[in-house]
Image (cartoon, rainbow over all chains, first blue to last red; front, side, top):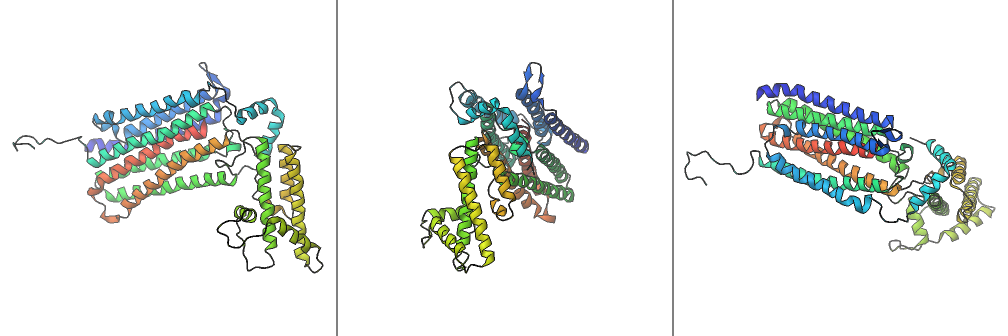
Amino acid sequence: MSEQQSHSYVKYSTIFFALCICTVLSILFDFIDLREKSLLGLKGVVLLSLVVLSIACAKALFVMIYFMHLKFEGRWKYVLLSPTIILAMGLTIAMTPDIGIHYYVDESPQVDYLKQAQQATPENGSANNAEKSHVE
Amino acid sequence: MSQDSKLPQYRMGLPIPHSKLGMWLFLATEIMFFSAFIGAYIVLRAGSPGWPTDANITHIHVWAGGLNTFVLILSSFFVVLALEGMKAENFAKARRYLCLTFLLACVFLGIKTYEYYGKFSHDILPGHIPETPRMAIDKSMREMKQVVDSRTIALANFKPPAKSEPAKTEESVELAGVTDEKTKEITPPVEILRQKLQAELEAPDTSESRKKELAAYFALETKFIDLNKRALNESITLTEMNQELDALRKNPDYGVFLAPVHHLQPIIYGNLFASVYFLLTGFHALHVVIGMIMFVIVLIQGKRLCEKWNDYVENIGLYWHFVDLVWIFLFPLIYII
């Protein structure tokens, strides 16, 4: 036990640096702006979300396994955590067809305006430029 | 329970302290709690084409989110070191790291406050955001009417200083138009006050400075009536209105009063975005505050900190890691995607 503790100090700092590197990576991906690029048939926001969320998952696993000591816990962890995680994902998946996928016609002013804005880009562009003048 | 005392004692339940089991069960419910919000966010985001992502419009800064991520990760690391200290009976070390964690939590909330301040000052609040140019122009006219009305009331109340009108612009407009149950005296409508001011301006015995103030007020009011007319018959565009307002703000006589009128910026799905943003980050900040209270409970023990607190420190550590975990997902979801 004492041996484990003595080198776990080093290990914790390694995990900490790994987490920092992951954070820097996700910020880098934001600056690269994957919205414009495509890779492996995926493009735009989907690609960006996939990359950034998998980094987040990796970070979450680092925190759970090492910082929350799940690596050293008994099998009870599976009993306790698997139902919640399955239900949590199920909740999101269950909501998706209702709200996330538009299979019905929507008459929202936002969408109408978006179409207008896309048609008349020059005016919109000047509005954006005016906005930039007062950024904190 | 066991009849023979020589037999090894059976321990009911899991091989962990009850408090730790309780904490893990609580964290399981917390996972559900946050995944409901995060799930709702993902679904709403995916279902809204044209969700606001431009940092200049939403005033969401990646550097602030990234810095906060770093702060929370560092604090999580310190909690682990504090627990190490507790287990090694090095309580001074444990106290030091718990204290550092608490300070980092303060830093986190400080950065969060800065971000919230930015949102409030640009009026990026649920229900306040115009989503089309029409709505933006209407909103600016409402805000300007409030400014003019509150200026009317302020100037009309200038002479008798005994009756003090509430300084809040939003309240004063309501008071002027609608008789509130709370107000005992019926405040005269703004129109009557305006006529009084008009008479005062024309009166010969009014002092020079007062006359100047009144003239500025009437100039502002004329400008407002003109703009409002153009807004009502839709003969002004968003860009023109912004230019007009900018010009008014620069006016030396009444520019200062126009501070409550915001720069026009319609944001498609802005209200939905603001609701989700404040819901997610607000509940996360609440968790941070609760975590800080728990850190304070152990920190005020001071030198009395002993091995009895091992379980407590481990449990708040678990809670704190969870708070970190939630932020790890919120950061990419809100700040990057």
